[in-house]
Image (cartoon, rainbow, N blue to C red; front, side, top):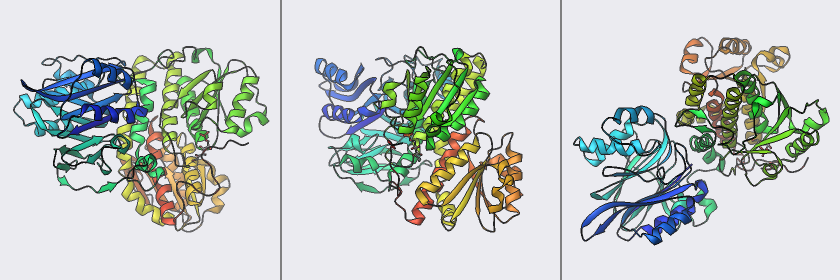
Length: 614
Ligand code: F6R
């Protein structure tokens, strides 16, 4: 999660770009840079200053070697591809083009290979290829705008981009796919930033670009186009000076904002755990936990509460299948009372968004008393759990405000899958080829999340039906069984519908007695080895009058065409990453059901964001 800001105007931009970067520093701070079109007696030219480390270092660099202009872009980086050094810091230049970028260009290696013969690459970043593609297209005779749009069509992944071009000081090009971008409207100047916080003090009139949009900013006008290059008008929202309001952007609730942020938050988590340049998981040294050695561990004890417990439950499958590491799984509030037999070569791993949940803390402390090494996967890096464990593993999903956990869940899954791959590599069960394939699948997740988010209008309609029921079932098998429980939990906590998540094969052992005419049953079943079995279980309830909603992929929908009921079609995914992507429709379904019912989505009754009592 990097931060971007750009200004096109009639006044010097450098100090204001720096101010924006400081407000964006929470998004990443391992290097920063600024590029402007500098005008002096000799004419206009593209100049940049970059520095490793925090924004403060860039500020010092600018004091020693000032640069200014009336058009500029700036970036604060959280490294994804390539080390955090000055060479890899944005903006990246190629010929006349300067680019800042947030997100991941998935196909950058293929694009780079294509250009390698005629272009010199000086960084290890995925971003540099964007600058080369635009410059190359301009050299072949296209206008700057044509070169920009042609390049956008070649890029795969989830990203936000800003571009300025030497010799063209009246245009700032921007595009959004997967990562957010907000335009600020000024007088005689216009702005762009990763969010409204970046634009605070510059503009209160904000246009949030929609998925696939791109735009050309001039000093006196803004032209926005959709993914099909058709001119579009997007609503202007007036934000108050208050950060909290700005943070919610033009979303009605924090929960909806957090659901929509997930392509980006998952990218941020991925950045920490995988080296997307070499398509490998990062080593314990790179993760700054050099002593975390899964090959020395005989057993893993996973503990967590609520949504984090369901993430841990999915991870049990991954650690056992990919790393052949036996896993104990406990609801944290039960662990110490169960008095588990835990040998010293067991690693205790807690999963928690807040890092403050009393039950999870107590379970961890119990394991410490038994002499085990402890680790915690947490979102709040300053939390108690982070301080007391041997290995603190960050989620980097950013603050989660909505009480119902959404983006922390997908980041937990992402980090846990990366750790399971790591364990598989360390324990000799994953070959370099298999590691490459799994990490490639992980880097595709942000884009697939963006595709799954596009199901929202259809989900809104389906949710209207669901909101008329007092009960519902979620069914799944394998890794989709915990996901079924998470789907049911989301429905319960924000829509107050009594929902149960079941292993699809277990229903016939009792709960099927509850199936009656019209009861909603939601099946989670991508086309995998367990697909046919889940469909048979859904047939069993369909014949008893249940209303089926099948969440699957296109191939699954085709194979199950005889099953009565509705479909939600997710993008095709890798077998192991599927639960991360299938989390999106279940979150949106709960959200829109709650909206139809008029409940308080961000602060549902009886709940608290962090449960610090036993
Ligand atoms: C559900 C939810 C809760 C939390 C649980 C654990 O949407 O948010 O079930 O997941 O209270 O909280 P953390 O992860 O902070 O330990």
